Each structure stands twice: as structure tokens, then as C-alpha cells.
Length: 245
Length: 285
Image 1 (spheres, each protein chain N blue to C red):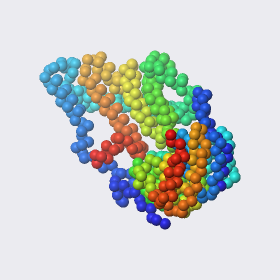
Image 2 (cartoon, each protein chain N blue to C red; image 1 turned 60 degrees about the horizontal axis):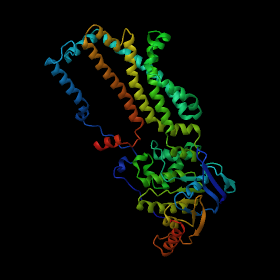
Image 3 (cartoon, rainbow over the protein chains, first blue to last red; image 1 turned 90 degrees about the horizontal axis):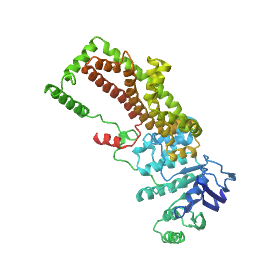
Image 4 (cartoon, rainbow over the protein chains, first blue to last red; image 1 turned 135 degrees about the vertical axis):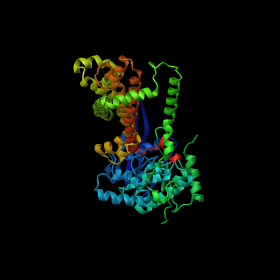
């Protein structure tokens, strides 16, 4: 259970100006739930994700994971960024190893092989990032985030830089991994259809500073068809609430 | 559960999958392209001298230069001159690069070290390096110590600046990956900062080495009884342009060879880079 209460984040820039990105955010996310955060640019959705993963510290409120406050990055929370962020000088194996450095070498190797198998990249274990396509690189990033078997996986617009065909494939793949591994998944996305197809719940953030505008439950069985009437209806409804004016 | 289909890339056939694309060596003839321009210049030089455009005492023919060098080489004198010059550059380069590596790593990594040290070092950099000469001679005498110190100072700044800015400009996004994954300080340095900084550092070493060759001449022109720089002064004093030109050519060869050593090391160490140059190489293969 991830429990976010009254969360606020204010950034101070050097010149004494402040910018509040998030204010008064309350959100409870159950185990194994898939929640998408959608909203227009600058509504604080990425900020929220960075707070949950412990990269930034909130200026108000708190985040609890299984009852314990989140104070910094932990192996229990995996993070995938918009870009794969692989070290160009490290092979696929060594990039995944970055998440495992505190474990014994043999345990590292076993888990890396396992994770690469799961994302379908076992054959590319010793390839360098420049030899990978965009979709493959993002799979390596997912493997790196999942190799610790975190209870929460955070994804910050992970497929936005990919072509639409690769994006669909990776969305399906992600759901597959989720079914197998049983983590909680929080996804930031611009793509409302992606949010509806993947999530149990879509959270709409709005405004400056960002607040939760509404939450939409998606009560559809998986696998979901992107063209299903209900999916399209929810998509229209959410887009209407985004305040795109 | 569906099987995940792999995106295979055409340039990674099953046999080489997961290995770096092997560099196909260029055909012999293509490698000789680098010598085309020197050959043209040599011909031009030869024809200008044999046509008598320039008098002998200003620009001797290539054969005269070659003979002069061979004569020096035969007595073993030339080898001694070359050896002492190379030794000065090597020791000065090693000392300057070592000091620059320690200080550059410190100021690049630690912002408080930067705040304390960098302004002073930048101010010292503003002093034209040759301006140190009188002081160094006064302090260290006219023999090796002052020469090597001067070369070391010349090498220091490009190495220092490239290393410091290389560390500082390491992609914040990659450092964030380290934080998310709980990397300790040692692993952050070893697995992220050092490799990220390496290209810039190697550029610094190459510029530093070039300055090392520049300063060894300055040092040897000012007062030496041996070395290629001394040979040039000697040629000037005794009115033998062939010796001056010969020494110039030897400097060109020595500088190019030592630079090629670092460049070769750099190519191996930064083979992961996905730059324009690399794409040209593999495109040619």
C-alpha cells in the first residue's frame, strides 16, 4: 500500500523566486494496482513520481510505503525514465548490474540473466547501448528497474519517445510483466488511451500548482481492446476533463 | 502467456549479436592517403629548389636536408639529441599531467574544492606560460629542472581544465540513475564519472602533449647544449638551414607519433561512443 497524504512540493530557484509544482495531493494506491497520472505539461505529474521514488524531497505532507515513510531511493521502488538512461560505456548486462551492486557477484549474475530473459533480451546481454533500438534500450531500462523485484514500479512517460508500433508492443509487454511479477505500477503519461488501456485507475492532475482534479476507475477486464467502446468513451471523458483550453 | 518477439537489427546478425561491430581494417592503399599531401609538398619543395627559386643558403634541397640528418645520425649524435628532447617532454608531460589529474579530479568532483582552488588556478593560467621562464631559471638553474618545470606547466592547464569540466558536465540524468539505484560514492566514480569524463580527459591529454612539444622547444632555444631545439639554434648560428629544417621535420614526426599513441589508446577506451566519426568508420568498411 502506497499512501500519499497532503503532499506538496515547492521549488526555490536561485533568485529567491519559488515555484509550487504540487499542492495538497492525497492518493492511496493498493498493492498490484495500476494507476496512471495524466495531465497537461507542468501539472506536476513527473514531480509526483520523483517524490515517490525518493529523488526529490517533499516540502509538505508525506509518502508512506507499507507504512514506512519514503526518505530516499530504495530497492523497493523501481524507476524507468522517459529516456532509457543507459550508460553508453556499459554493456546491457553491466547496465542492469548497476541496480544490484550490493549483492554477491553470483547472485547479481543470476538475477541479471533472469531479468534479461523476462524482457526478451537474453541474446543481447553483451551488446552496447548504441547497438540497441529505442524499444530495446527501454526494455533494458525496465529490466534494470525490475531486477530488484520492487514492490512499486514507477514509469515516467516511458514510451513517449518510441514509434507507435513499438509503443503498443511494450505496453502489452509491461502488462505481461505486471501479471507475472505482481508489482504496483504507477505510470505518468501524456497518452490518455495508453492510460485507459493499462490502468485500473486514471488520476487526472490539473492546475498550477498541480492538484488531483478527478480519479476515473477503469472497470474493464484485461486484455483490453484499444478500440472497445468503453475504452474510447473513458478516453473522451478524461480528455474532456484535462482542461486543454 | 505470449512469447515476446525480439526486435532484431539488421546490423546484428546472430553470429555477432551482443558483440561490438568489428572494425574491418582499411585496405593498405587507403591508409596511404595520409601521405599524399606530404608527397606533393616534397615534390613542390624539390622543384622549387632545383629551379633555383630560392637560394641554397635559405632553402636547401630535400636531399641536402636528408644528407645532413644522415650525417648527424651516423655519428650517433642525432639519436642523443632526439633522446634528450623526448625524455624532457616525457618527464614534463608525466609531471604536469599527474598534477593536473589530481587537482582536476578534486575540483571537478567537489564544489568546495573548486571554490577554494579553481579561481587561483585560473589566475595562474592567465599568466603566459613563457613568462615563468626567468623565475624558473632563477629558482631551478639552467639545467633540466627548469626545463621540465616549464613543460609541466604547459601540460598542466589543458589537462586540468578538460578533466574538471568533463566531470562537471557529466549528464545529470545518468547521475540520477546512480542515485535511484543506491550507488555508493566509489561506484558512482568508478562506473559513471570516470567513463563519462574519459573522452574530455583524453582530449586534454592530447592538447597537453602538444603544448609539451611546444614548450620543450622554448626551453631548449633558451639555453641547452643538447636536444632538437639546441640543434636548431646551432643550425641558425652556423648558417646551416638544412639542420633547422631537419629538426623541424623531426619535431613533426615525434609530435605526430606521440599523439598517435594517445589517440590509439583513446579509440580503445572510448569505443562505446556513438559519434559521427565512428559512423564514418563503419560506413566505409
